[in-house]
Length: 525
Image (cartoon, rainbow, N blue to C red; front, side, top):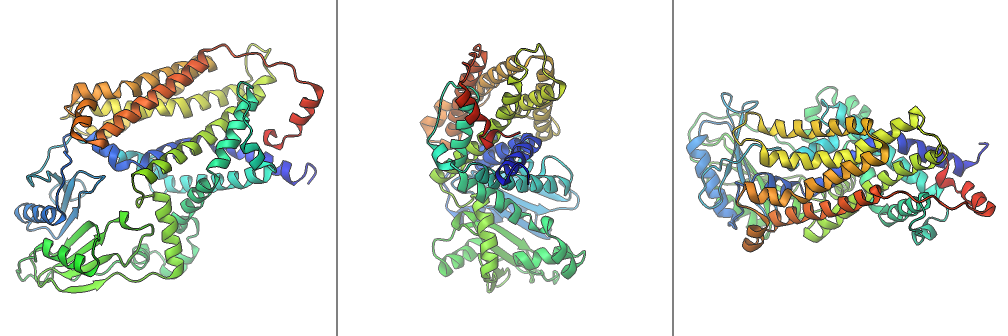
């Protein structure tokens, strides 16, 4: 290869980073928010109060409610409250009610009565967007999986490109324009490199059935449901015998699970054929109890007699490896401190992508510094940079403002929150087209700073769960959200102030410095 292997890798690193960087920025940012999915949902539904409750009592309340309101249903679902999730959620199949024949309710953990919470997608929206990109199934998953492959390729080519990668980690030259961006890009990339390698590779493992479907198709044909039943240990539920039999109290089954495995946290309960002699009850261990997903972490009981019928299948070494990667990617096992570490590492990954996009454009803008207008292709990159980064941050803030300002009785309210998100994002693109680059950056970042910084005030004015009340009552989920929004606003305000300053003209470099810069593969085009 004429220019050498490292130069070829630098070219690949640069151009794949540009072409997919805008989408990767959105995937990484929304994926980072997903580490606090439950906390975001708690903030977006302030009507649901967090109360300490014993699991057995929560199960008793759920069973009483379902027996009173869904006795004729074929299937019940119960999701237990936890340290992160305030709600006790119940659901049941009803062909005549709910979306797709399914009804779900949130119960107050003190009274056992339904809570009329506002309709909101909450953290679930960011979670779904992260890997589905608001596209029809399976196209969004295909695209996000391909982007994960590009991210992994970018990390590997970046390692090859920077032969002095660890030396560059300790180099930072502030106030040096492009060199400062390059130093920051390298330092952040090296600091969280193992995390980013794990995230990118585990993304491919999570969707390997999409990436490598040939083996599945050869063995299962079009019966993908059987594949997933074999993979995740799905059992065939016997048909209802049409013989009435009282359902065993669920707290008693929970006690049996505790006797079998003391200290187990139960996350979900599924009841098939309740009130029938062929009833089956499956209790699944909470994902917070272990890193890897395990099929052995569930217990199936006869709903009529309470006898243990079976426990999940043990895992092979290969399956444990795959499930461990999936668990590491999602981080459900992480406690508060580790979850914050995940969050900051995710933000670092987002920053690596963003600084790469800024560097690509900045280097080429220098060649046209004396021209009154940028070439059309560079102007396009500039507009997409602004909209994909500052515009996306503004859209996220708009989602939370919509959550507080849209009428609680609005039909399709949760969908309208999402609509506001995309409308705001689209308007940021229009604004970036109409305004000059630096001015557009500053205005969008300043507006984003105001939007995030004022969220705690908006929360206090529209609910009784303001920051002062949350701190006083020890509701650290609500308080943590408000404080994080405030910190985000301060950070964006600092970025906006940097953009409002007139950039300094870089001093002319010596011939030797120019030769050294020309040979740096990281800036290859």
